[in-house]
Image 1 (cartoon, rainbow over the protein chains, first blue to last red):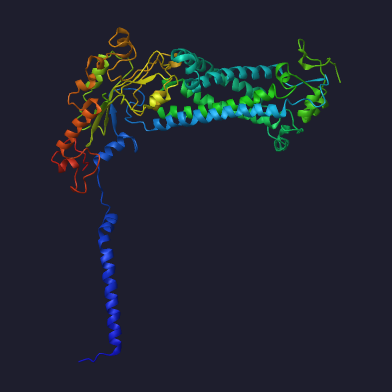
Image 2 (spheres, rainbow over the protein chains, first blue to last red):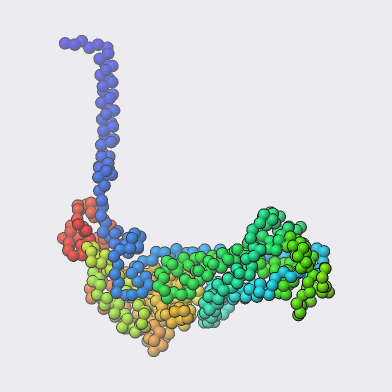
Length: 352
Length: 212
């Protein structure tokens, strides 16, 4: 018989403790076994209803779909993207563009009230420099007219329901909107021609140089002072390239939208509308600023685009590098064409 | 008032296109326009299902929301209708509709859209009920005569139900209970073992959803 030694008591307690720990672990972990089996074994829960409705909603790859009705998207049972498009147009594009365009007008008005019209500091010299050729001016005004028509008709289609129905009534606005739609569709395909003309006649001189970034850093003299610039300053260059980029986007999306008879489905149309709307709103906002600075905003600017000549002092102050080049080439003070209006100011001079 | 709804029972639809033909004929729908269509999923495979879809007359209709000329209106019965004289044919309702209900004849410049046409729940349009102008533009107005849409009336298997939402769902619920396999909106695979739901309910066959 073994006598019980003191170590036996401690060993028994350790064994009891370990057994208890083992039992506790078993009690806690064994019930988890089915989950482990399920995880490893991958028990599938085929849900025929879920499969069917997932296919109906086109959430996965399009199923083997057949319909006797031929047409665009007739095989699609539920187009879930329609809701995201509705949300984009009604809850994002319309309100946000309204704030943006309204904000642009307010900002321009504030700028005019605070800064006033940017004058020619040294007054008109009466000496003229030719700035834009007749082709350039033709391209610009052609674009301006086409853009204004497209922009106005587009804005009517975007905001008219909220702004014009209270004014014109449902039938009156329907006639207006129908006319705007037809005009927009008619002038739309003419717009790419305008973009090409702008590209052709204004590309030279619109490359970016270091002096343009310095101009931008000085704010272009918008709040006072003057910044050095060549034929076109940074603002004009950004507007040129913006016109090309926005114009390209509008033309591409516009063609997709205006010719719906090539069987493009709703997804393509929704993407086209998305880019068309955003590009148009940004372009129109820029056009507000561009029109302001070219007319009311700056003395001596509009005549550059109407009769093609600018005052020498205007050129010295706003486009000094270009003026210096003109002076070096002896093009300052050339006799202007017949029929020049008084807006150039001062007596005409021949030669320096 | 009634709340008019459609319900197409995918278990019963046999893709006969009787609803499509009835609608097209009754309303003398112009060429190229199809108010109702039947779409078959998994055609020719086990688990083939067909569903008839036209305008679902949504309570919060997205077509009405995006219309730039606001030509849609909802009647007291919950039927979503529109005014073709106001419609400018822009197509926005077609982009927004989940079911592709708005249809357009290609009559405009560049092949662009004429005035929109869609399922009216056989309830006509804003013209006076049963008038000749209403029939020419929108088709027959059966609701004003106290009748239900013709597509549901003509359905050969009564898969397509149309009418007050409560009544329609009561009918459907009866069917679901009778079938005993649920609305197929949730799974029974684990509880009833392998094989499709229909197998376990003794309803296995050509249209069974099992792929084995």
